[in-house]
Image 1: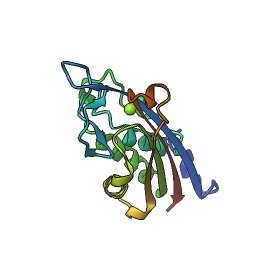
Image 2: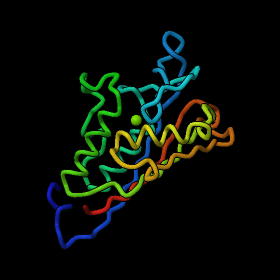
Image 3: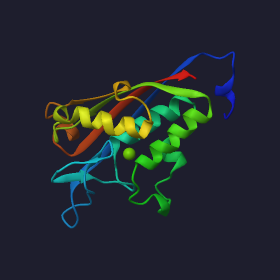
Image 4: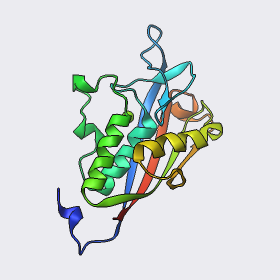
Length: 175
Ligand code: MG
């Protein structure tokens, strides 16, 4: 796969899509939840993600969007959850790896748009600082990053607060 994105006769833009979901549980010993981290920022929450890494579903979805736009292996393939080196890892490391792949192949981040679906915490009051945190990892202006929140209307596992889901898309532009 490496190199095919560098084809000068190829398109000048590419899109990528990423998706992630983590189960939410209380912290040990009541459950297996880690402290809740979204977009690289800690959140006060009685429940946190069950995950091998820090479980930052927002960064995981964005990482997969970037990797998907490049037609590369996804996050779970590049950093398997069987790898002890990724245990409890700060997911900004995974996103930085994807950003490096973007730039190495001659692309720049046009924009990223992500939707976080959960009952709690409310995302709306934190949209600005989430975008700023993500833009800092992406190395791009903050106005190229958008994060919005939705609930699941109390339906199913997400609506019952037992999971958090994130969808993300990105546009890459040839540098
Ligand atoms: Mg994940």
